[in-house]
Image 1: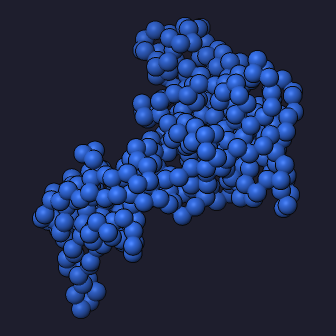
Image 2 (image 1 turned 90 degrees about the horizontal axis):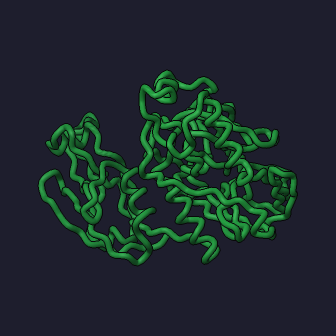
Image 3 (image 1 turned 135 degrees about the horizontal axis):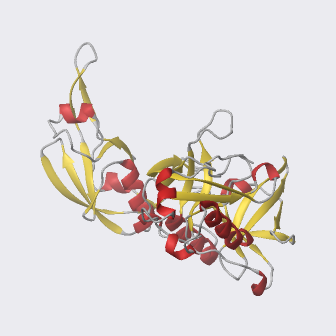
Length: 358
């Protein structure tokens, strides 16, 4: 079973901006839902008291040993969201609730591409407390974020931090990437995987999933799968048991200085340069072309020919993250989309493509 750490969030000290906001000098997003209080930590305490009964600790047994992580209840039917890597190859899954109940769970479905999975427990509806989702498309850098999970199997822990960046791209458990990911300065450690990242309204904004750290410990760069993608994946797994994604059949990279200079583009030009068109894929059938670099005798780049994707169905595409995110959120296999393509820096094309399936 792969072990990818999950998320927590950090500063116990709140920013001067937030303190000023709490005492009336500045507005603080989300505060009206909690109520004005005299101390910032009271807000966090209220959120924890309301949200922690929705969060569970997960223990798994596999042929290779034992592991675990965190998760959270999303409905009164007993469905629980966690990371796919938490329950990967699990022979036994056990869920523990805050009040002490320990229940066996079964896997409803897993989506390695988004590193998300849904479990189900047989618990009376009145004993379950689902947590609500927020709209992750509305997040901005600097917003406060909180996480509840079970780091190092230590039970329920609340940590705080901020949203450090949005629209990041990370690798899932497959060859495909996950777009629209939330970056946080959260302190993330093993055991927090699958737990919720929440806002000051006590709503889930993401599912804690990965960190960047050679030592598998917090380095202040953590990532959460956005709530909007989580909701789509969870609903599909509950309905069908599996998740399918549309397939364009290319690899590419963001427009860089070489493309700008070689194709005589404006220095603020953005898009996706098609590096490779996969044989027999949808893009190959639609006539898209992969990059051709022209080198001199000293192997120096002197020019290039390239197709650059600038929009999908009229929505601007600034780079690969935008393309990955748009396809994951807005398209299905067999759907026809229209790509806006700049060919060789000169010709603007509208290319209809019938998407395939991964």
